[in-house]
Image (cartoon, rainbow, N blue to C red; front, side):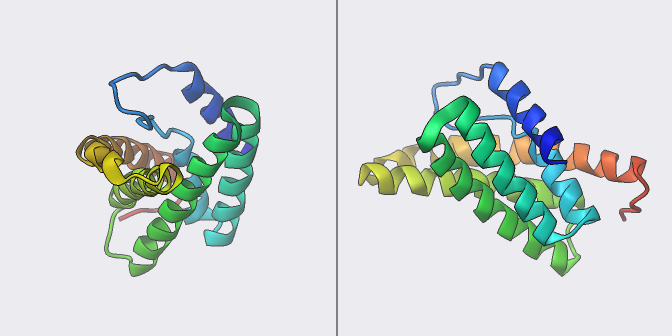
Length: 153
């Protein structure tokens, strides 16, 4: 699953998205993370996510990319795991929460790194893009889970 997530990270790296706001990405590797969360559990999803983020950063984005990825990835996985545990949210809802919190974690990291909170102006765009990407990722993860036999209500 880590290799699959890394392949998705590479594909995403090849797709340029330039809407004038840094940090907007599709997040397609998170389909694998959500599937791992539901099929294998939080610990495996966490391990897959960490290895994928570190390896992807070493290959494509460098140390700062790793820092942003780890902050957003860990925060979003914690929120997704909590939402899954509550069992009142759909897989798609969990994906939306993951996308939004991932962007919020990256925005907080940027603010702390540059010691300037003016990056908060990016918040509306990042919330919307995170929700849209999270919806798509959650929807795709739900389809994958259904195809591999995990019944999702």
